[in-house]
Image 1 (spheres, rainbow, N blue to C red):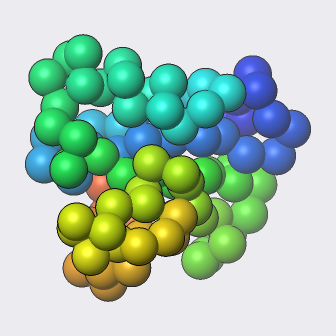
Image 2 (cartoon, rainbow, N blue to C red; image 1 turned 30 degrees about the horizontal axis):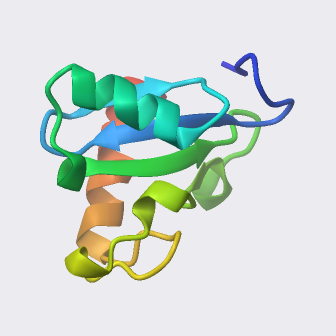
Length: 97
């Protein structure tokens, strides 16, 4: 599943409401823009990195500039809400693994 932009990972953006993922771009913001044009709402979009060659918790990383949202109690690049993280993991597992 390795993409075109990085040797060991694929960037993705998950829409937690629509349960869809956009993958494989140079920037998470490009994927975010694609989903917004397709009808997603920005507050539902979260940036991730997928490492296809790794297993367990190392497979998925919740790190993206688009995740910085103090107005959603998410002050940094990580996804801080454990329920949101679990939902993202569930969506990724159901669509990619």
